[in-house]
Length: 109
Image (cartoon, rainbow, N blue to C red; front, side, top):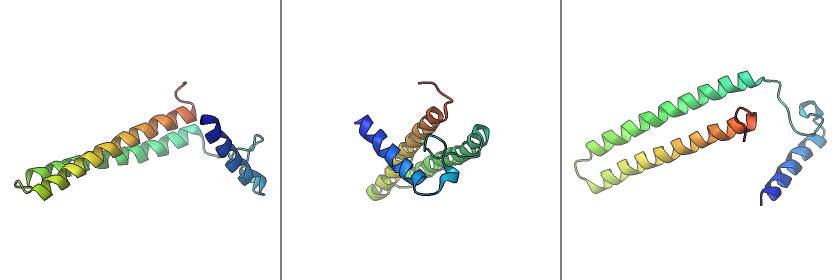
């Protein structure tokens, strides 16, 4: 299964590089960027800081919604959904940071 994904990825990227825009392609046929790893880390750090702050804010808002629901089952359900979806989003974001660190070579697998 992994080989299939790798083949699809390589085919997709190499067709973009072969189709005429060779200015963004390296010798291996994969796209490159002029930004350094330090610049990319800084930008991604700011993006994930904002996402983390919004995650905490949404959990607080969900908690306030739960407290002020006054026992109304519909409001309680909406508050719980807000909290659960926020936590799931936070887990996905944390996973994304790990995947990006592995791809950029900051973590050796």
